[in-house]
Image (tube, rainbow, N blue to C red; front, side):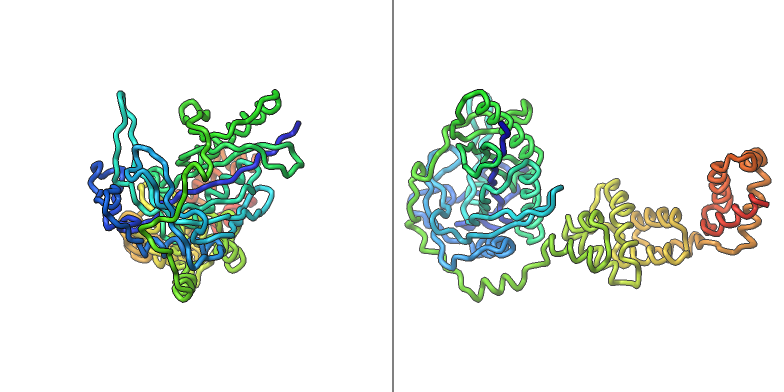
Amino acid sequence: MQFEPVIGLEVHAELQTRSKMFCGCEVVDNTVAEPNVAVCPICAGMPGTLPVVNARAVEYALRVALALGCEINYTSIFARKNYFYPDLPKGYQISQYETPLAVNGQLVIKTKAGERTIRVRRVHLEEDTGKLTHVNGGSLVDLNRAGVPLLEIVSEPDMHSVEEARAYAEGLHEILRYLEVNSGNMEKGVIRFEANVSVREAGTDQLNTRVEIKNLNSFRALERATEFEIARQAEVIATGGTIEQETLGWDDLKEQTYSQRSKEEAHDYRYFPEPDLPPLVVEKDWVEEIRAKLPELPRAMFQRFVMQYGLTEYSAGVLVAERAVAEYFESAVKSRKVSAKSVANWVVGDLFAVANQAGETVASSRVKPEALAELVEAVDGGVVNQTTGKEILIEMFKTGRSAGEIIEARGLKQVSDVDFISKIVAETLAENPKEVGSFKAGKTGVANFLFGQAMKKAAGKANPAVVKTELDRQLLL
């Protein structure tokens, strides 16, 4: 029997606000802050305290919902989701259930088979829980994260491969960073994935019993956990077993899922409208103002870079993966009359390599967009050759000096004078009679060695095209 996986994803993304969802506590970096330093009676759930909605969190949530093409519910309802767990101080979580902020969106993903549209069921606001650290003999509770604004994005079960699940997760991750509502730093746990996975007989549209894999905090974990669960379920069904609906964890070391608890249904959480919060009403004018300020999104920018600048899909994909890099590239292209393809090649190739080696980013480097454009112009215009250009870039990165300054100070202008190059080539051939003899005996590959020697003799300043032409001429004399 052939099996087909059915996958839906729930993505939880912390919103980059300065304060928590329902109180004025500062949002701190949970990986470096001392435990329990950002807690107040409201986020600790003390009796008599009242929550107040963070307007900036609502704005950020609307940015995401609009970017995903969702229908906005101008009136949404907060609800209490009741469950008892040590990292949930109130004994309930304020979330949205029956009437979320937004519904019916979509995300177009790119796979080896082409583009696919994944439907987004809902986008809603809630508060994050605290953090448990398990130690010998017990668990430690840190409530710094409790109450941090959390956006939950729930897909329909439209994905049918691990590749599609990863592409969807990466697409959302990219959009959240473009919108500047989330840092995207998964090592700090600001985005977490939960995969709902089931399998069915290929060719049917039946939805079978699913499991939920919780708190996957990397693309690799999402991929490996989903892959493992698909294989496990297929084996269970093939051998006559049944799949139990349950919540699973993922063990990175053992690379397998493990049971955490039986899967709760909505009635288990005893949802009811949050009595301390009125309905959340967003004005249509405010929503349209937010829509008008949305940046160009990755997919649209990718398509434009390919069409407008004639870039390859690979180069365009690398550039738009980071909004800051895409903007850097376009600033460079617009600063001078230079080839967009040349600029893209320099950014994707040499500038990335130099920045990565230094542990920096392209956008934060000392090489400003207009400075890179000046270097590209110098190389493309034959002022310096490609090899010298790479050396200049390294110096630009270290010092912040312009390409023109470095070329002038070091006397690096490329020489195209035929008489000068003819003399260099003649001296090179005279110094390498054995290799010249090999060439004339039919070993034409030796010409590459002689070319390298001639360029070396010219200290890299000679125009390579002129050197090659002159070398070919003299070798055939």
